[in-house]
Image (cartoon, rainbow, N blue to C red; front, top):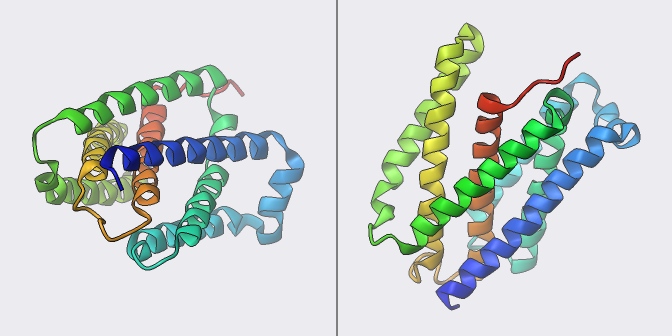
Length: 218
């Protein structure tokens, strides 16, 4: 498949995924009936159950993308977007609509900028993979630690570090989409890149929301 065609396909599926994700999130947030159907059968542990399922689907997509059919890959990707939307239901209740809109616009601009960098840079970003992965692991570990110590300064530092890492991942993933040797034997390359870019955007969005989001007045 032509490399520009792969990138176009990835962006199309990314757009579809984001529409589904935020559509589910908004609908679930403002629909008591849908919220009941999602959480009531599982009680207080419903959120964690959906989160576990979301992680499992992400792992399957990441580890089995070469072996699954195109239809299966697309179904799992869309399922992941739905599950992410479910996990984001609370943000529309906690943050003001205007701050969410502002952060989403900032995320979109950030994505566009680093996608352009990934497309036009002459630097081989594949060499950055190890550093990005190690940095991401470090952020995850420190965020878990910060759950217990609740240090606001550390939280801000981790948000900024996470944003920088996922911005770099956007450029890295776009460059992989244009790399004819990456997943050259796999028909699901477009879906896989869309999935990776989806992860990048959602994480940047959530980190920016933690930094810039304005909580609703109770």
